[in-house]
Length: 101
Image 1 (cartoon, helix red, strand yellow):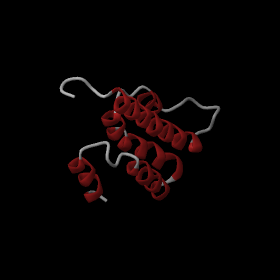
Image 2: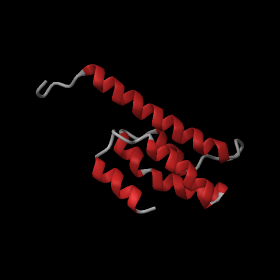
Image 3: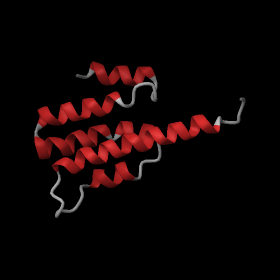
Image 4: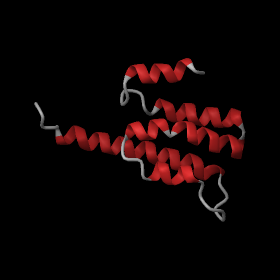
């Protein structure tokens, strides 16, 4: 299509970003006290512009989850979220995340 983007594909990508964002927020919400202020990572996830931004926020999310539920459960949650990025970020970037574990 040249420089023009396929609107259907673009709306699918936007929907996937929103899905990942919702999953990340839901993950945090599970471990937060509803009566306390949201951590800074909450706003960064909520207002992230694109899938790459959400990808890089996984480490901040991991840190926040470690503080609230421990490293083991945090790693399980972040690994589950990481799988949602498959096919939506460059393969090399995804592979480097797997090598670190």
